Image 1 (cartoon, rainbow, N blue to C red):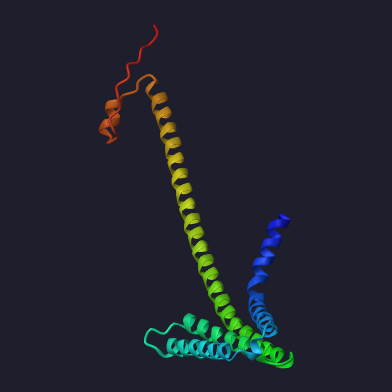
Image 2 (tube, one colour):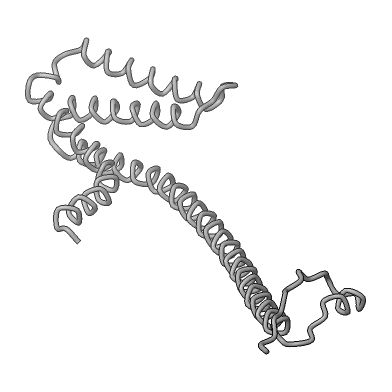
Length: 202
């Protein structure tokens, strides 16, 4: 297998598993950068961050309990609300203890939700693979049966052609014998044969 293809396949397998941890780590880093640039002393930014967090949570609740509820929208809204809450606390907290604690909790929750999605996706993939395999085996069985049937028909046709050829050769040889009378054969109920003139050498 090509090394480039193997590396790409490995990255495609690892990337979804690392996405929750990368997301929460990115939020933590940006929040601490924001903290270093004076986020602790900005009341307006704190109010805005709180409002955005509550708004995202409200969207998640509405998507969960509404008539047109969508689990994807609800999950995205709750994840956004959690990310905003993590960013707000990590941006305004003094020191690293509380931000790291919240980062650990957020990462654990993100992986718990992702694991549930991965299990569902894995079950769906296995069910699809089983269905495809069953369909493929069924089609292969039908093709084998049809191939055997066609082979049997070809063999019967070949045997019939060989028999007809042998019969024609036998009738031709019989007609060439002296004293052959095709009328007698017709009276016996055999199909009419073309008359063949025979000559005798003097």
